[in-house]
Image 1 (cartoon, each protein chain N blue to C red):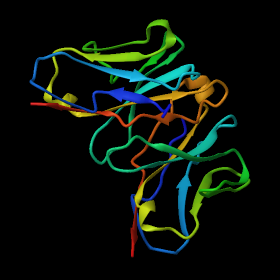
Image 2: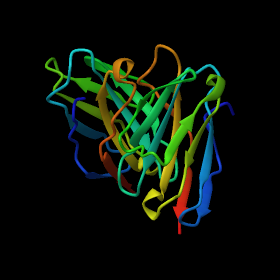
Image 3: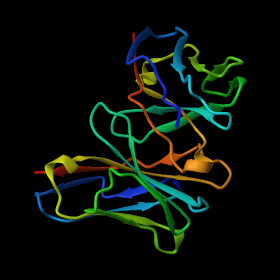
Length: 114
Length: 111
């Protein structure tokens, strides 16, 4: 399967701890996106990369959140000093050149902050 | 970015055709209309995309009137496995780099 892969699928952590999620996009896709989704709501845009450049960040992405995409391949999303309000599904998506509205999503990482 | 309005929920029965309409009065010239489907505990899945008139693929049809201020996703002969949340999105991601999801329409297909 060469779809978007996210790791881990589930993460339980205690408030104040740091967590890091990984996303491996489809190999030829140049754009990579992070979204966050809470129960009953649609996904909320967090940030996106074109190759290795982070081109846009939502104001939802506080200074406790940081995302990287070294070498334009996989991406990591780190949350420092987690809070209970960070509990959500974190979704990664990628899109190929020229088909930007067609995003391919991974299955997400479900974060629970206790 | 154009805001979309769609029903919060819909019910249907197996074998029926389901039409979900989305309003996007402020759609811009360069905006495309894209629909996604999401099952529980999975990421959204692209269904169909259009700019104007009618688009059809193996999954659904998308009807867009001339003024483009609304669109209708049509699912023929739904089955129980079509129970999901359906999102209508409008945007020009080439410029903004992001798609904005609303709350979507929860479709419940009953036997």
